[in-house]
Length: 624
Image 1 (cartoon, rainbow, N blue to C red):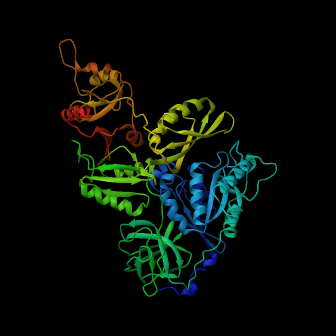
Image 2 (tube, rainbow, N blue to C red):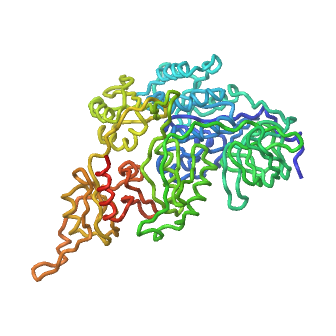
Image 3 (cartoon, rainbow, N blue to C red):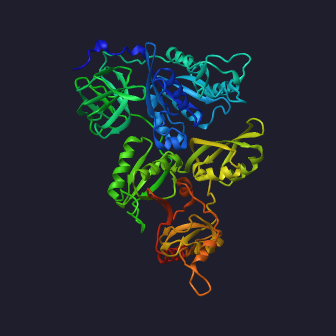
């Protein structure tokens, strides 16, 4: 039995806000404080940090990857809160979520100030017309400079073309970890004296964020912004009700943009958000954020509306991908030994399913049924997807990331350019500038960033930043902070020197031995230790010189009357260099692949047969 319209929540008592920020500026911790102080958790309940970071990869990396919905009740108001990713590689998540909210909490670190992703997410927020609130976080941090940061953010608003209403934004000062928000800084200000609660922030949301514009009497309109899946109810679409009322069991039609054909369906499950849960409800009205089930083939940007008076909203627009990779069915000698999903059918279905949910991803089939071209927003965007598939039991091989080029009106080649901001110790400035200079980056700005530190701003081609993170860490001895975001397309900047050294390639299959690895260490840096299975064509290390070198890492010591195999126990090997997935993708060349399985990440030559590789090299040398 449906709930009467009169009992639905008045849209004037609803506030929909997104929390946007640069990576690690504390927005998820701020949500934790709001949840604690609005009674979401009972007294004595064990509350995990970063409650909204439910994805294991999010907890491991300390970043938000997928947008999350929650809702709290404050007085007579319901506040729907959406935690959005802070990294530009997941900009598709930010772009589609901003269409469901009327306000945005811009969280900025009180010491670091605006960073590249801050500019990125703020530009998206201003373009969508939401009302911004500035939260200067971490004011209890020694050495913070909250007032200077407010001035820097104001300059950022002006440079992004904010209108007069957006520039007149409320400012709050917070310590998310302490659960404190202040409407004004005390005089004199001492970070050690920060006390209070989170209520000033909630009061600012209620007063500064306008209620949704839709009315209960309007025709039903729900634009789907996020997809989820439940093994019991199937595909779930999440979106805001732009107008009208939606009821359990209601017949509806679904369309993807104005003019598209309408598909009939029926609402079999209806949920609203409360705290960290989805709550089953009989009906929901304009302005609220809901989750619906029972709609087959539902996609991002679809509009759910009524059959007798259908009103379909425009679809979502997101920035195009800038980086692409080739995904290949694993055909190594170890194929099928470590994974559950190993066939081209499995790989195709998983990639197409990901493309439905991930609007920033593009999956294309090629001439080979075992090969797929996957394009995304950046190196992290693609590597997170690969890591997720690996943990789900998939086996695959992937190529080195390549940038997506385009031509301007005059036929000149253009490539994606990134704005990179690096806060480094003064002693590391030269090393960082030299490393980026070789990658065709141009220094745009250099300013002091506190005692003994300098902030460098570069415009660098995206292909030059693939694999740069580890080199940056080494150049700054781990004391540097780096972030970059897509700036736009610019003229092709010429060739970038690749890896100057070749690969050490396994000569034959077998199990590595300490005796063979001791000899191999003289040839370069190894990627594995003794007692591991390898196959012919697998990359086992980096050569100390140019060109590839095939070596035998499975050779055993011959037994004689004077020597025995127990001599291996006295061999002391240098610890191998263990490559992460991102480091492996950056290391390989065009003729190499990364084999990804639930149990291992291996590097290999694309062509495993050494005789065929030799013939291909000879043919390449004969070409003019």
